[in-house]
Length: 244
Image (cartoon, rainbow, N blue to C red; front, side):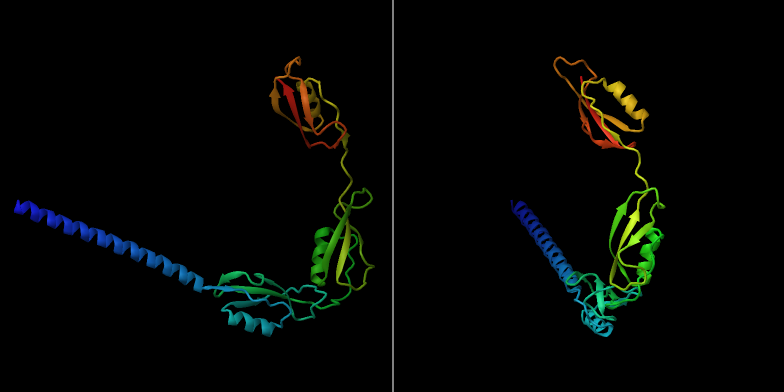
C-alpha cells in the first residue's frame, strides 16, 4: 500500500509539472504574439499631407515621419498650386505605411504651363504623350465614328492650336461603325434553324435552357435576348430559351 501511495504521489507531481510547463508555454506564446503586434504597430506611421509644400518643406515633413522622399521628373498641371510646389503625392495623405517607405511627389507646373501643342491628325496615344511633355492635362475626350478621318485620330481639340490653357478636350475618330441589324422576332421559330442562320451571319448563339411548355413541340424558341427590334452587330451574343 505504501508503495502504491508513493507511486501515485510521484505521478501527481509529474502531472502538475507538465500542466505548469504547458501554462508557461502558452503564456510565453501570448506574450511573444503581443510583443510582435506592438512591434509592427510601432513601425507604422501616417503619411503626412505634402500638398502645396516646397520640395524642402516636403523633405522635412517626410523625414520627421521616418519616411523617404522621391521627386518625380514629370510635372502636374494644377490650377490652384504655383509652379514648383507639390501638386500630387503617392501614398495619399493619412495612409498608414511602414518606416522607411518612399513617398513620391509630383511638382506643379504652374498656372500657365505654355502653349498648347497641335494635336489634330495625331493618334490618341501620341496626343496623350505630347500633352504630358508640354505639361498639359487631358480634361476629357469625345468620340465620333466617321469614314472621313483615320481611325483613332484626333480630329479636333478644345482650343485653337498655340492657345494657352490648363487642360484640353479632344475629339477622336473611332472609325466607321460596323454594319448593324435589327434583331428579328424568333418566338415560335424552330431553334435549330434560327441558330444556324444567325451563326452563318456571324452571331454567337447560345441555347441557355430548355423548358417544358404545354402545347408547344420540343425545340421551339420561347424567349430570346436581345428582344426583337434591338440593334445588333455581328459577333454579339444571342441567347435562346427553347421548349423541351
